[in-house]
Length: 430
Image 1 (cartoon, helix red, strand yellow):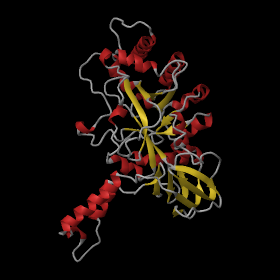
Image 2 (cartoon, helix red, strand yellow):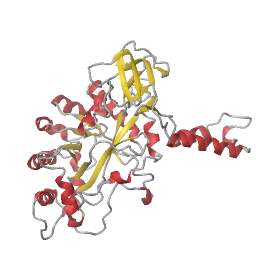
Image 3 (spheres, rainbow, N blue to C red):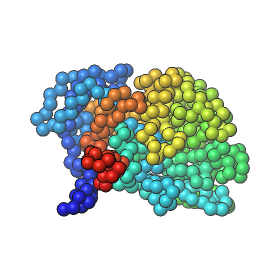
Image 4 (cartoon, rainbow, N blue to C red):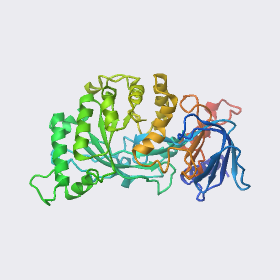
């Protein structure tokens, strides 16, 4: 067998390991770990974790090691729940500049506003668990994301859904989430005025709640009315995410949500700290990028690095998102949480913003976000402090399965970083 054939064979085998996690769950025993359960203040020092059939069986001190268990010696290293990768298009976007690989938005071209409100559009139907972006993100310690319906000419982006990053075809968890975009970002889609956004949204909500089957000049299709109705009313439990930055617009979101009995989450939120008391009283959580400290536009004049600390101090539940490359650079999200700590946010609150807080926001805390008995085993063993840029995920476990910790990027690294031979590495063709 030639060297090239041997190389291709090894790469094919490694790629298969990336795309196909073990079919059967494992019994895993993690010994002597510093466990951050997210259920109590401070970690459990020198604790053990037993995982059986994909579920955490026990978290305690001095547990007995089952004879059939795969033993992992943590040696005091930190162990946390798998991290939240933010609102992203992971599994929906492979190459941003190749339209055939982008499924996270409806593209509208020169159509009236009435044709652009499509709350029935659901990006989760296009989720691809075989995406090469998933293992790239997963091996950095992230176990789930919220698939976001991106705005592309509409103030209603559509529906998304939480999804695990385990690479299986049953990765979708939780309930659908509806995305709105208000403020400066969506002015062009609402007749040039943000005031028109609320006019259009109010009309849409009235259509969704009406018993009349047909109205002249409707904003919604029959399917859109049915979809929007699921997110409003006294019995509604599905979450709506409003992407908004300006403080005055955030207050409009609170009023609109109260009027139509929505369950809102504020995303973006550069100026949310200005109305932190109102958010706390309304019990509305916030997802923010802690790295934003300069205004991208006039809606973000009040951006500041200690915004997360101010919101937390006011009693607002916070989580973190990446406002930049949320899909291909989601793995950098924990660095932003570390920056928030450097600007006054308590360390435990920052870790909660990457784990239990977003899990509760989107109703998947039965699946992830904590380390406790009977919880799904979505956990990470770290080389050091997970909020430090110099630390790395040593082992990721998703749904009780050990991740091979291999991605397309690590395969390329290993291929081209071969040991130096007689000639310098630049002359050594793999």
